[in-house]
Length: 394
Length: 236
Image 1: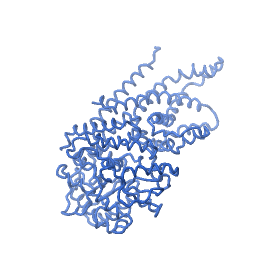
Image 2: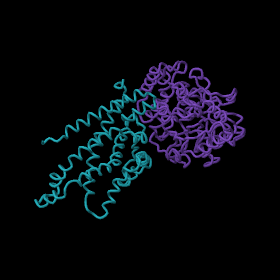
Image 3: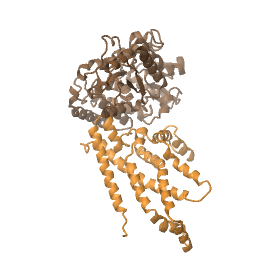
């Protein structure tokens, strides 16, 4: 059986997947799994192209929010798992698979990890806060104060260079905290009002101000600056994924502060979600593929992914096996944060196009486009796509 | 449906602008370089290799390197301009600013592709019989007259080929956009092929992507045929 994975270029990730696969191959004699890796940036397009050409492998990995779309498009088949395999998994890693399973005729399984973004901060002037979220005024004041020190190239790094799923994952929680959303989740058939209402416009203006005030590097940030800017001390604050926590702790030790997400009026929100394994619809070995996935969800492998990559483990029992997330571990707080504040991106096949529009609008507004016009254009594009697809079955 | 798509119309305009900018400049620069390296000097092959090198390097690698060169913070270009103007030059975020992004990409594309067309020009130059130049020398022609009356007519067929090839290549602009700007900032670098891919694979709208490709094919076909007609042999 062939398995396609998005982690090319990340040796640790390849090594851990390799261990899971070789353990599985050694544990039984019916199937042999063979790993093929792709760069993350090209992975989704590769899957779509392969599906059109009829060349999908047996097992694929899928980013959680894309799953309903791929299921509806007929790329994926329902899993054949034993009862209770998914018990105890964090909602962010599995919610998509379960809530829409009847509609999309599919189930997927969480890759053994989940993510939540903390706001990590290298201390300069703001003080350690005791309450567990920031009000908008406090959050807005920080970059201004930091910029005034003149010690930093930019006070805030939003990783704008990573123009992909990072945008909706990291920035749509801001929109939700303002009171808007990528689309209307009561119907899932329109973005009207959610993405172009007053709350969204307020977000857009705030968002644009971060760039017009030169608080954050824009979309032209290079990958190198993104990778090293914070660690080198050129950026003071960084809004980033928990998977970057370990290198930062290593670099700054006790000088590193993890700060909670800002609250723009509707509570602090953070992104949540997980890469998941799924069985392709064209696989001739669906039972074998399901067996592999069940094998890979063992706590041991969940913990291995967490230890290697710094990701939040998807189950509490796996968390106990990890170095960083066991009770009292340096990152244990993120397990609870992810559980409590993790916000799923809209669970609908229409999310794929909506996400592309969100990426475009976040980039365009950052680059100075008119806020209301851009939001209206994105809303129209999302609505047009939903209509073209007959409301995606809703 | 495509006509009401603002982004597509923007992509169409950008693509045409790109072709209008790149085709003449690349062809002209390539000819200049070809004439320069078409001399019998010691070590001329070194120059030929240098000019040709960007063509050999993958366009993705070249694009990534130029992202660093164009970087708004401490990019090579900003540093160089700052140094040459004794610090008077204010750093520009070349790819982050809609006004400069659309010109940054053709500039880099001209540099990248010029070597290839230089070689085609060179092969054209070397098919011109030396006896013609010798005859011109005996007649006392100046360098400029030799170029005007011997080189230029001799390169006629090469010129037709180069114009068509450059136009077609320029219309298919994609890799640089995909690696360097992703169509941004604010759609200033959207192009037709980039839209076709984004629609077809990104939005899973294969029909929409195909429609753009067909339009692109018709445009390129029409332009190639028009060029062929305009550059036909007239003195028969």
